[in-house]
Length: 255
Image (tube, rainbow, N blue to C red; front, side, top):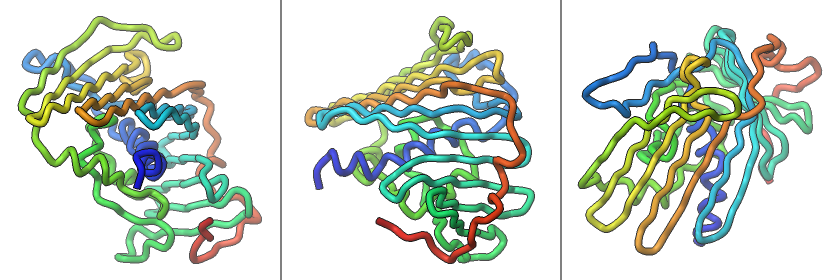
């Protein structure tokens, strides 16, 4: 399997991992022992466009998705080979809903029923979540059946780094928001090097506005840049309900 094909397989997984970065609402804090310690957070209610750029020896690929967050739930929208899809999480109902926006269909998943996952799976979180940020979010572990763990990343990340260097950098302004900037560099015995850089908006409860992750090895290079753009704070409750006229099905068709 070519690297380009593997990158395409990883696209949705990387997107959902990125959205998971903001799911935990921790009180922001600094650490003198580790000044580059990342603190996850986000506003209580907002929507944003997520732009992901993957650059490698195989070329460049940009994809765009959308996220909506409120105390009532979480929504993610994207377009893939199957068409336009949306995934709605409703913790209050203990359910999630996968929508086919082109054909007005949806699959319902009940968190309380063991094994009743329908079109929703619960893959293990790959160690490659270092490609985004280290944050835990139970709901983000629920992905669509087309989310495939990027094996070409997880195979490499089984090895522990021989050196880790973390640091805080001067604030930068990203799209009008003053951001705390942190960077971490890792090196491995096989010559591979990783660099992760995070930009968190101070005025938005340390929302991750941008992240840069780069891995360079003797025979491979990959850089993933993710940005939240068009951030808005007017969120409708309709974002977290299945629209009238959608038909419930057991499974959505695949291409």
